[in-house]
Image 1 (cartoon, rainbow, N blue to C red):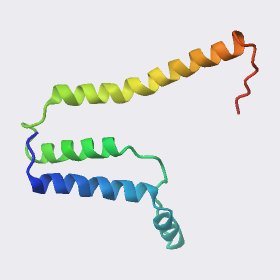
Image 2 (tube, helix red, strand yellow; image 1 turned 180 degrees about the horizontal axis):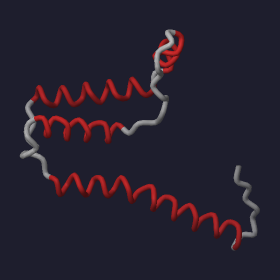
Image 3 (tube, one colour; image 1 turned 90 degrees about the vertical axis):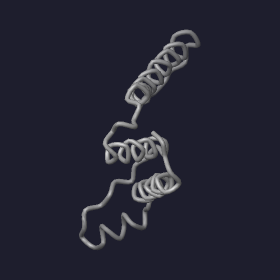
Image 4 (cartoon, one colour; image 1 turned 120 degrees about the horizontal axis):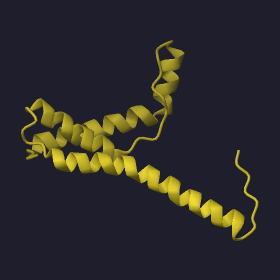
Length: 107
């Protein structure tokens, strides 16, 4: 998608707001003290926040400037990366327990 400096500024500001909302302990405590629903304190990927902002602005502009093939590859990467990490951890745990005769305790 083609971006102007104003659009890039909006994307960076939206990324900052998302990261602040999901990482601010002070905001969480203030909302809880005010009897308001709290925002969960969870890790948020800044890359996903930026890509979400770009897709959101692209959809507002009609969606014609978005390259859906690239977006599909990005989403596929978001799905396959944790699955590959799980597989690698499983293989490493197998070797640790069976090849090196180590006992691994899982909580």
